[in-house]
Length: 374
Image (cartoon, rainbow, N blue to C red; front, side):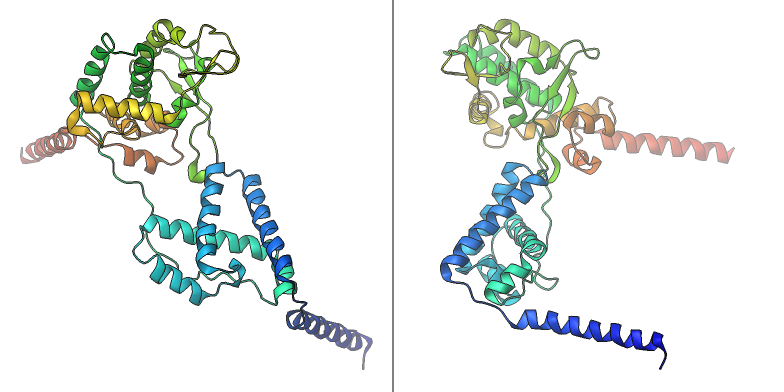
């Protein structure tokens, strides 16, 4: 037998021995105590949170995933790595059978992501402590189906929004608390003019207004909503659509009633009536802005009560901008969307734009036919 053949046999022999070792690892394990498993489960979840934070996910997204996992763990009564496909069948097929599709999809995704983390980071440890080989219980047969597309939010028409803000503006002359009413009015008007989200408005500072940029000035949104929970995404919004006039009036005539130091670093654009320990105004919360809009709608546009929320105002902004000429890419940049498809869902064409375009197309076709007939 040649030397090469001898070496080949030795290599194949080593390969079989290695396979035997792997098989033995799956067969021999040292059971851990209940206390050890409890501590290990807590450490694993902490590691999962840290790993997702290092990936750049927003705190709210991580809390949502952990909340989903906690709900499943409470129902299951044991560490999640013990779940089998049959357990997932019962949970998603019976327990969550009539739950909203968004809840089912979110919980399924959280569980799948958690098991991916277990397989990548702790598969060997879990096997050594429990004898189990980690495998995700969600598969192609029981994975919840559906989509989590945003609900269609059709905004009021332009005359209706004008009626709201005209009535709200007139209220400023007689209201009991001028400063907070004017603040809520200004924040909501900016949402309708440049598509701000309520959380973005709350996070703005005075220094975020860049009057020297562009033709009208720009607003530096530092805490913009990120796509798929990826965390804050910054953008610059041009103060178009009258937003520059709205802000100048608020800063010159209203802001000083909350605070007397315009130069203080970190001074909020929309202050609260409450004060910090140093006497400066705190930042307003989103509940105050939401309640302000709710009260104004009830008073000045009652047909939209409980339907016109802060999230509907960016839909109005996108629709109005589109009707006035800017293309989808420009509107996408204003609203801060990652995908043009998201921007398209925000645009709801009012009045007769589609019908007018169809009629114009028919007229062009008729003229072409007249030319051919001659």
